[in-house]
Length: 309
Ligand code: UDP
Image 1: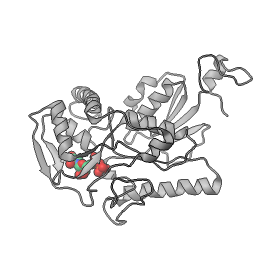
Image 2: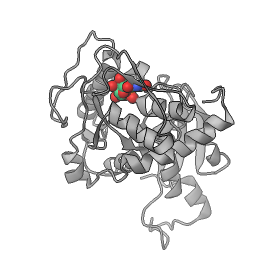
Image 3: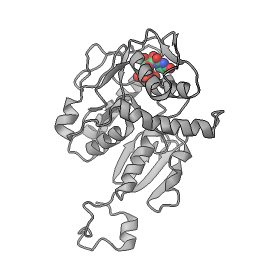
Image 4: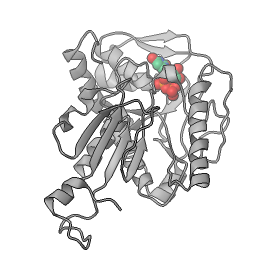
């Protein structure tokens, strides 16, 4: 397997390949596509912190340099502006493919508007193929198909994660997701826009829990798919109330028309990840939300017009 260049230069690995005292594992060279994005940049932080070398590939469509700027100049970190749909040849141990614009204009997860609740990995989903939201669902489903075809046909080692709604610092402020919308609206003293009757449900996972799940999956023997999400289920009205509690109890709610084909409920069944990856989320909404609010408050103050958001 590959030995990372900085470690080799420092001469810390002996020719027998034994690890230096105190280091539990060999550092890896890891590629993160979309590594300047919301989830990718948190993953990059964690991997660099534990000693791996990172290559970040991002076309800055929705990712931002500011998300990784604290690593610029670090020899463990390389940043390449590149659109992942174009070929590129890189030598790495692991690839986390997280490049994907994920704002609501780009829609949902693989299960569509599910008839099974909560959703386990064995449920095949319920997607209207010609619905306005289907491009995202079908895109993810096709990606899984291709991944498994490469695995079966070309022996490529693969992992599949099904990521449920995730929130945290560095989310795009104005991309229209419900948590970022509510938090930004409350901070800007605007009414919280609840779509439909607000009784539809989602399960919100804090980004550090997702990062932990992704790393465990990558380093496990299992291919997946694995649901990675927080099973705590909230209606949009519940969420609006939590946001009010944390930011501004006086905030008003404004009801707006919902988009067509909006899933009525979504909640991951994470039994499989619990049993096989020994993973489960640790951060409840009431703990994670204030951490995101702190980041949003700073960014909105620094850039009130939203030009850099
Ligand atoms: N939503 C809302 N107000 C907003 C944005 C979204 O009530 O300002 C609702 C939306 O209709 C959906 C839920 O929140 O039912 C989650 O939407 P989001 O776009 O965050 O994620 P997804 O639909 O992909 O789960």
